[in-house]
Amino acid sequence: MIVLRSALFNVCFVLWFFVTAVLLLPVTLLPRAAAWWVVDFWVHGVLVLLRIICGVRFEMRGRENLPKGGFILAAKHQSAFETMALHVLSPRPAFIFKRELLFIPVFGYYLWRFQQIAVTRGAGQKAMKSVGRAALPVLAQGRAVIIFPEGTRTDPGTRRPYRSGVQHLARLSGAPVVPVALNSGLFWGRNAFLKYPGTVVFEVLPALTVSPEARGPFMAALEEAIETATARLEAEARAK
Image 1: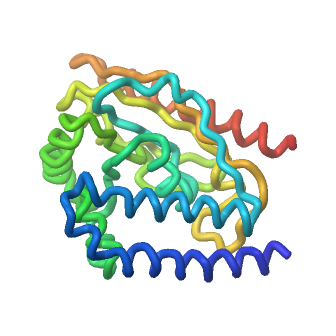
Image 2: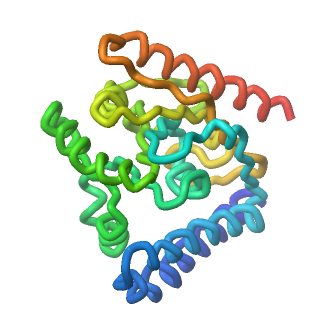
């Protein structure tokens, strides 16, 4: 049954993308603020499909920890799920993503049109400077900049070294960093076909700030906050 449901979801996912991203493409020619509803419409549609077809529900905790104005959201990354569901957490967010995605037909256009932030992997300090130039106007608009500190998706129960790009951006902008823990990989795994029923939980943790002299301590505190809460959410889901 899970195989059939997952297959049906994948078909509906593609059809939904066509209906919204392709047929509503002319709407994106409107001023950006007026066209954002296309993205929100698509994201909410995907969440509805997941709930109805696969039994995957979504719960958000800790919204009271979100600061006012622009902020940097540093999230655990286990699945494609959070690349969509984080839109629900903060309106009109800007994701930091690998530049290669810009060359995907239609999808790449949406990334460009809605001021998402491309980064060239392996470009080092040059890439960080480019990200900073692109992120500052976004934060000034009161929007969230979303970054995955590990740089790629990880399986539940595992971790990768946290990259210091989030610290560089926080120091450059002065914006608070909001850690987010999650358990999405238990239900929609990394590069996985199957979608398992259950409740994906995102937990927004208290914001952190970067002082000019605190380098290692900040990254250690960020990693500890996200990984500890993520392990707790995974254990909670497995116990049900």
